[in-house]
Each structure stands twice: as structure tokens, then as C-alpha cells.
Amino acid sequence: MSDDGVREPRTPHVHVSSTMEDVAAAAGVSRTSVSRVMLGQKKVSEETRRRVFAAAEHLGYVPNVLASELASRGTSTVGLLLRDASNPAYGLLFTRLQEAAHAADLTLVTMTINADDQGRRQVAGLHRLMGLRVAGLIVATGGVTSHQLEPFHSQIPIIRAGRPETTSLIHAVSYDEVHAGRSLAHCVADAGHREVAVLATAEDVSFPEYVRSTTMAATLVGRGVEVISVPLGDDAHDGVGAAVALARDGRVGAIMCPSDLRQLQVLRALAAVGLTAPADVSVSGCDGVLPGADLLGLTTYRIPVEELAVRTVARMSDLLSQEPTPGVVAERLRGALVRGRTVGPPSPRKAS
Image (cartoon, rainbow, N blue to C red; front, top):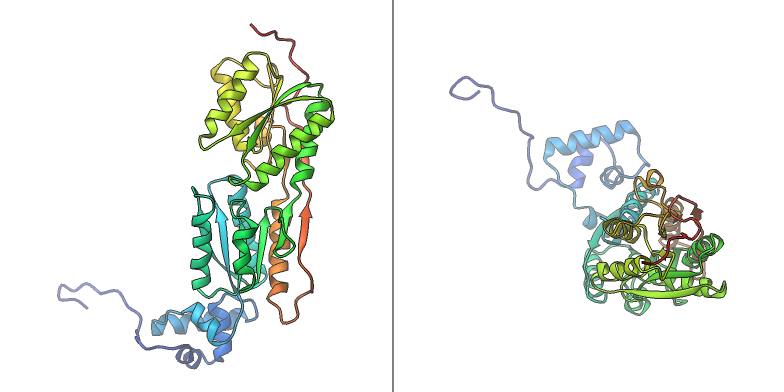
């Protein structure tokens, strides 16, 4: 009670030197049970979990999860390097990976990187995750090359999530980007288009988008379609503006984009010059996870994010087991074409 008669809030009985053994003794459980509770594992009862948390709160105990795992030679903390989480595809993947990891009793320590210089910041992020003594690494970014990952391969289990792997050394569960590119190209060609602009992402900017772009262009050429490749440089709007100019001048009847975010940029730029899709020009994208894509009627390709997350975590769990499955993981998961309203027959509009 304070001098003015007001009851003061109750505080925990803090022991600065409290240990996991102290919590175990106070809760009447084993040290292993305390460790499992603190790591969020499911191998304890709700009653045990309640008693451990109550004891920890009373003692003011703050767990050092990484140190605990190292001491017990545990393997439940995995580093996750994620490309820009503001991108809907990566944001959804992050959520699904977290859910899958929780179900598998794994803890993810995550770093996200946005702008980068040829993957250098992302590689630095991997080194920082390694410094946390994680048991494995999940690399969910298209901006790190196979060559950049190889030094980590010999030190720790590492698996790509999303990007197709170009070597036989690195484990990968990826989207089938070739199938995505072909499916979209056939959709546009089947609509009757014979002059198409393809927005092309550089390989060192986003390898998945690079594969999509090159596959779309090659498939269209194989169908007898004239393709104008429009590079997407550091300022993506420059490429978008060039593609819209081609449509405005009547040189192309369709614009194919390597992602739905690019597709939205194109649709906005078209609207700014008085053009609409598909009445004046057809537009396609890729990813299919953009919130509201169905309401907008986007023609796109839906990548299997949920399946990828589950398969990636399952593979990582296997790699961390005492007897991992031999061989290099190389899974490619197919999505599905979404026939929206932004691709239609060529417009009869003549160039002015």
C-alpha cells in the first residue's frame, strides 16, 4: 500500500539468476518438460504448460531459447530468409511457413530483405542467421544465386522455398515456373493475339520472374506470335511505360507481366492513357495470391503457396532428423491458370 492509500500493482517475485532447473522445481516437472514448453513444442500437456508458465512468471524467468537448444543439442530453430514481405506472394508464404513450422514443432527466426545489390544484403542476412546458431536455413527469395548459397551448403542443412534451383547441390521445393509461363502464353495465344509485349525481368533481379518471362516469350514464338521483349530495369515503371506505349500505338494487342503487381502497374498506366483491358489490350500476370484478384478479374496463374510451405517444412524436418532421406530434394509444384477477364480477343481498334 502506498502512502496515499492506493494499492500498488503486484509484481513477480524476480530471481535474477533463475534457471530452467529452478522453473522445473517450482512447477514440479522435469527440465525437459520446461524446455519443451519454452520452445512451443506440443509434447506436453496443457496442465504442464500452465504450471511451467506460472512458475516462470513467478520467478521472472526469461528463457534463452537458442542457448537451451545448443545445450541440449536440439534442432528446432530454423533460420528463414524472406524476400520483401510486403509482396503478397512472399507475405502469404511467410504466414504459411510459420503455420507449417508450428505444426512440425519448429521455430522460425526470420530476416526479410527488400532492396538489394546483387544479393549481397541477403547473403549478409544468411551469415547473421548462421551466427544465431540455427539448425537449418530456409531461403525464400529469388535474389540469391546458387553460387552464393554453396558456401552455406557444407555447413548446415539448407533448402530453397519457391525459386527453382539451378544446381544439383542445393535442396529445393519450388514453383514450376516453366509450367506457369507456358500456361499463360497459351492462354494469350489461344485468344488470337499475334503481337504481344512481354515484360522481362533480369535474372539477377528475380530468377523466378526471369524464368516466367523467358518461357512466355519462347512459347509465344513457338506459336507463331511476334514478341516484343520489354526489359524491366531498376525503375520498373520505365518498362511498364514502354509496353503501354506499344499498346497505345497499336503495335501489340496484349501485354504479359511476370507478376500480378506488374500487371496492376500496367492496368493503371493503361487507364492513364484512356485504355482498358481487355477491350483495348489484353493483360496477364502471375502469382494469383493478390487480395481481391478475383474481384478485379485478373487473368493470372495461381502458384501453390500453401503446398509449398508444407512441403518445405516437411523436407527441412527430414533433413534435421537423425536419419534424413538420402539424395537432393528437387520438387517442383504446379499451380493453375486463372482465366480472368483481362485477356480477350484482339481489339479491332486501329492505331491513330
